[in-house]
Length: 229
Image (cartoon, rainbow, N blue to C red; front, side, top):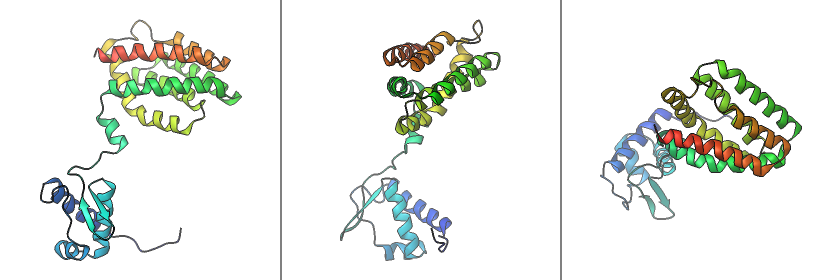
């Protein structure tokens, strides 16, 4: 990509903020046509290019939409939340319910598509989870998530992998809290080892039904515990 002039980003951010306030504050209700670029530029004391960038940012947030030959109109009073923001605000049980559907399908696919490299990665991840039994809850959860990540990766579906990765921060917080509050590892430092070993075995053997069944039992059990907090 060839180099070009730097954009005055602080001015764009300020202009975007001022225009957003007009919309979210009700000065420009939904359906209102915004003043033209020239008028806005004069009002804000910036150039038309800055106004244009600010309007693009507002369009990206779902607040305005340009209509060819008619102008720019307000289409929403509040900005849309992106996916990562929604996940951060979501209850861990809501995220977990979606995780169950995604990961069960990933386990089925993994059992059908796993390669020799995937088998090795799964064995390594299971060993890592077992090794983390002597660590604190946070480290154990990280090792647990690494194993589930290896299962999803073995499905060789980049969309499933991306979705699971997006869930990880919320899942991690919920799982660490669950282990600490319920003391699940106090008598069993390697909590859930049997089912995780069975999951890896089913994927390695290529038994998609067994992989899905074992994973469903594991995840639904964890969801019930999270819901009890």
